[in-house]
Length: 354
Image (cartoon, rainbow, N blue to C red; front, side, top):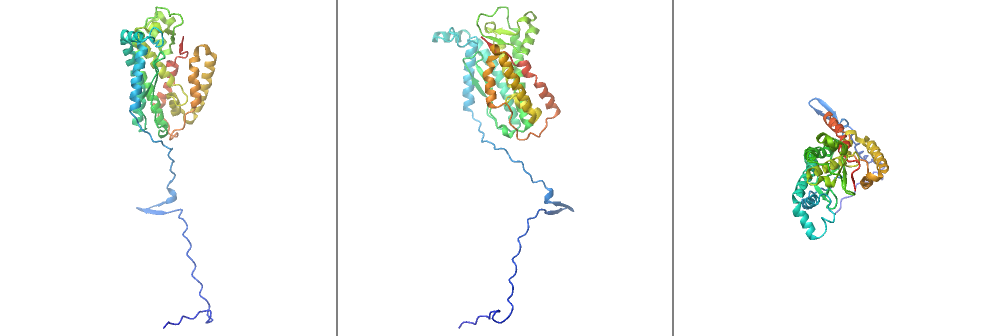
């Protein structure tokens, strides 16, 4: 038996009861008051802005490639030194017997040059590498670049690093550590080599000559005043038996070249650390002056044309760091400003001529 249903209020003539209104959603709290030890804090007082991290790349430090390139650079610099820095000459690079005679007859010069030039290059790159470790910036081991067909035997060495993680002060430290470390080794080697230099014999016709940067000319004039008038150029034939001078000259070339204030060279890192966003003005001004210089001295300075084109293609401006708002302290500022003289003293403006 079913129970009767309750009567409908409308049928009974009674007013219908209105449904209860739905509760309104709570408005978001712009301010949250906290009380700690009698002190009130509001959520609006807390700075919740978070700086977005740059897109870091997965950085892996390999060992095999640096070792292979190091061995190849040892061989190329040894060969260039043994061949009296004229590695493609027919009397050296000809038959197997000629190559073997060059190696066995002049191996000691090849070894001395190899050890001296690699000491400079690796010290330079280890300056960078150790500074990346100090600032915890991922970086590769030094990568040497062998070139067995030029009078130097190498194009220097580089390290690859995740520069997006470095701030303005850190990129300054990393950029400047290499040149200063390299100079600490290159200057004593060059000084010894200048002492062994003999410019009494004139250069041979159509042979390779090296233009001496300012610091090399000063050393020649200090140690050999009688050759002050001959201090601008030195011929390859005048360097026979003097591997330390050649290694020191290469050290000056590498240091001066890297300290040019443009792009992501060591000099580019340095001026960005010094001047921040304003560093692009110096980079642009230097590029204009460099182009004018090469064009004006195209018959002697044409060796730098390819390098200048490469720098322009890679970009003359330094990219922003992870934090460009950080200012350098006084000690870094003084060292950085003094370091701007390095390319003036060390870079051979006219390079190599034949």
